[in-house]
Image (tube, rainbow, N blue to C red; front, top):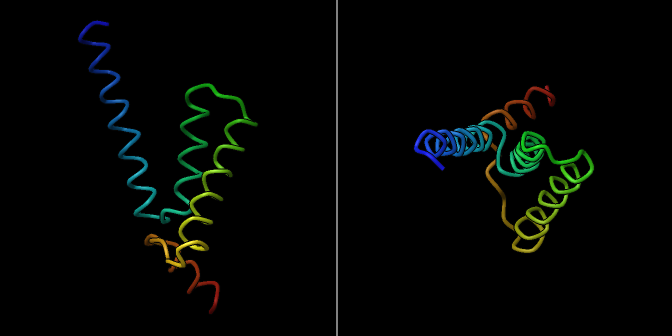
Length: 89
């Protein structure tokens, strides 16, 4: 693998990490995980069923481990509380 290919892969990884962090900030961990997982797997040419089931499985695992198992709240992001407040008005 040459230097240009290594550089391209590095920036690809940094971009995906940046997208994941922005998703976490915007919509919270619980919703960012399945969206990111699905988008990443589809971008890497995985099938629809595998992408959707992996995203759903990861979301369920995180929810069961943290919300149900440890009875803790996960970060909800900036927009989820705003949407919740808007819908309650």
